[in-house]
Structures are given as C-alpha cells and as structure tokens.
Image 1 (cartoon, rainbow, N blue to C red):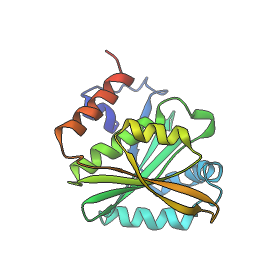
Image 2: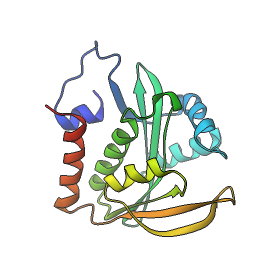
Image 3: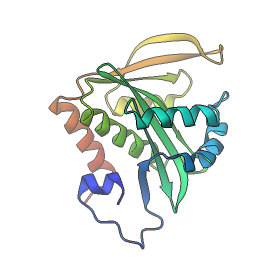
Length: 185
C-alpha cells in the first residue's frame, strides 16, 4: 500500500496498475530517476550523488520518495533535515507526466513527513523563471524571502522560499485541504 492510501485509510487493489504510488526511493530506482533528472535540470545530479543521498537517508538525515505509475518512476522528490528545518532538495516529474498532480502528491508526502520528523519549517530554492513550481509551492504556504543571484549554473537566479510553523494546526489544515481538492469524495 502506498503512503498516501495509508494516510487516507484507502485500500489499494492489485487492479490499481495505473494508480499513482508514492514510496521511499531505493537504489534500484536511480536508473529511471536519471532519465528524469537529465531533462529536468541543466546540470543534473550524478548517480553517485543519488547513491550518497540514499546512504544518508538510511542514517535519518534525508528523506527521498519516488512516484510510480504502473511500476515506472514518473517523479521523485527529497529533503534534507537541518536542525529544525527540512530543506527540499528536489521535486521533478517526467516531462510527459507533468500537470497531472504528481508534484502535488510528492509535496504532500514530503510535507507530512517533515511534520512527523518534528521540523518547524520547510525551505527550498526555485528557479526564478519556473513560475509553475513557484505557484505549487505557494499553494503549500511557501513565501519568497530572498534571491540567490546566479544560483543555477552560475546564470539563473533562485528564489528562496520558506514555509514556517508547519507543526501548527493551520498547516495541517492546509495539507488536508490540498488532499481534499485533489481527491473529492
């Protein structure tokens, strides 16, 4: 059963081959992740970086997820735990699968996990030109707090965004609202 169904108390049947499944990232996912990584970022992470991140996940300082559709990786995301903040390192979706709510599902699971881990806030950087990602992050309560000049490839600026007070009831309600909007009963 995937994490989302578990959280929502839904059962997943074997017939749900086309159901989106969110699960912890494993080394066996990395080859498929690299295909998405290569199209999502001008300077993609290497296989070695993903393996290092997964090793740190085992130690509890990272949390990485994959989104699977029919057993195929269609997206992934992750975060680093730093003191009392979780820093989202990446959220990427296969180009052919964008605009289907996969990034929203990944963000929901990352957000719930950050709360479970006792983090007080979430932070990330987003390319200044990526307005669709900025819109997604605003939906989750992130607000811009600064700019990192030439952060990407020493060329493009990054907007630094924070979402604070994620342990508060208001943030929990925000996540529940996002879940309800994408899954009307």
